[in-house]
Image (tube, rainbow, N blue to C red; front, side, top):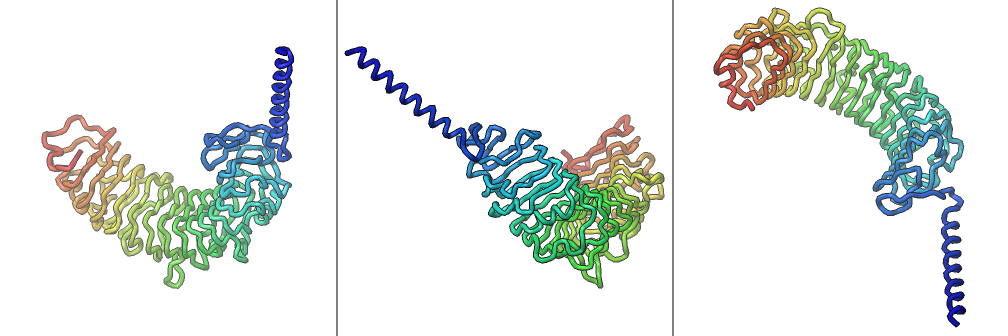
Length: 430
């Protein structure tokens, strides 16, 4: 009797074990190939070659081990599929397992071809990154990408784009695109009018391209951010046409590392807040060059390091005559503040200036009289950087016209001693 009960129980255990094994086997041999899963932090299945965190699936850096997009948790909205050595995507159903994603990164895959229908299964793709795929040409990108009506951000840095035809964004393509990055593409861009076809474009990155002439026949009416650094520009962008602004809402303009030596007589940037002009060829800042007449709203001006200038940067009287200006950066410019190359009234009119960076210039032999006259107009100056300026001496009167200073940096100067009371009049200094 006991033996019969034991055999019966043993048989039941074997049956349960067999059923469990069959169930597991059934689950790991599904048609979608997702036979290997790990657990995400949400406790939902995540493919073993991916890492799922909240709404993001990181399936990157598999270097040829992952050639398809696996089925992922339904809450995934961001897919990183970079560094997977895809080469080409022929299958129109490549994204069939992630139809709910809103952001995809296919950068650094050495892609040369995209099926023009690969995004059809995705309901509302809003961000697409295709950077560092130097084998992708314009026609392939145009067929697959430019019809994505929900796309808000598109990054195509370092592809095989050589030019953009004038009608690249015609026919209402990319109607919701607000951010476009085309940097590091060695194409010649003769005119910016092509981007006026993007009705809500706010941020445009054209750095490290060959933008021969930054002009447009039609206003980029929504653009707030324009990056044209490292673009081989010999002239400042043409911002006016018949007295009207071609960039009426532009807030930030980046023009670093170009060959700009002067500004035009007419500038129409009524809302510009930040101008980055460092690493250009400006030799002399003439009177009114950055005044409120040309830049009525500008708060930040970056003029650091004009690297091809062997002589000192000249600063004329009232060069920065702008009551809106609050931050001015002039470091690494070989400026001789202690000579007549800098007019003592250079900062006249800058009554709102709060931060001034003049480190790595020369104040070596400047008199207290000129120093005080330089800084007298800066009634609201809070932060002053004067590092590595060759300063040998500070008297008890040097900073008499800087009572509002809260931070003063004098690193790497040639000071041996400081007189009593040198900083006593700066009551807010911390």
